[in-house]
Image (cartoon, rainbow, N blue to C red):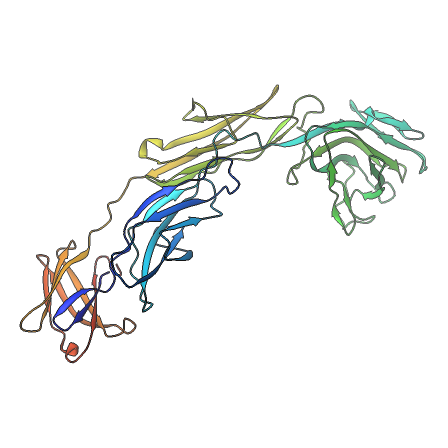
Length: 439
């Protein structure tokens, strides 16, 4: 879209495009402001330029954010998601408040440091019977499973396993328990000798019909009316104590996890190394030149190692939880997966497909010259969009526009008449092609 005006017998651009963005400077990895990119551009030559605005968003020519930087020739785009492609353009505005069209568009990405530290969550596996026992709490065995319970009513019975926390974090506690009736439903739970919480397996003594089960189930320790219990734990040794409140409530396994979304299953090993994938990479479609980011998350009993693969072949150096592919071309398309390992425990996530769309040349459509003819008609020289109709709009205030002509662009030259221009101090014109309008 071109904005043009007539002043007596001379016509020229109201505001030329802000110049093409000149440079991008990315943050130093490890700096205090990650997720930001600096963008710079050239200064306009007009003497009445008051400032510049930079626009950006996640889709081409669909900008969701704008920053007025005044007379500065540089801006910092902040809070960018690592690996996400952003599109940005600049406009100039003059002292009358008139704003130019967008500059040429560029795309950019903020990429977090490759090879980032392991970010997997932690698991701690316990067997209830491994703890110290206080009578009448005792160990029972059933179908090769040992668990702890009491067959007689006593609030004095307890079991207290000891454990080590590998990483300081907030931990949730899951228990494999059995509570078939409302009178065999609860424990008093204490961590490191702190305040005792009452843990009702089903959240209340009498859950809704059909919820209570006579089978072993996994339940997160929670407090009625308060929700899941969170334990801030430091690295090192700790204890958890289950006190008997009702005879027959049974506890088998205990799992501490720093991942609030993790849900254990009976497939989780009872001892040794454990590893569970908690989210898998998702398939992506990107354009050439953009970036793609694949991510996997896991929870494990210790640090996790990663190895990404493309079409089953190892990708050299791709050994973190996140795989970043920048400046894509069609050769990057394929199937991506990742192998994970924690000691003897292994897992695989994926595959996720990456589709890379070939670049599509932007259409050329611009007014390269405008002339006012002796017969008071106006001629336009047009680059691109041959054999299409050109729609010519006119305005005296750049607010209200009127369609004044539709001319076929057969050879790059069109001529129109604008009788309403007579007596006007200034006149603006906007040209659109039917094949690309609005442009």
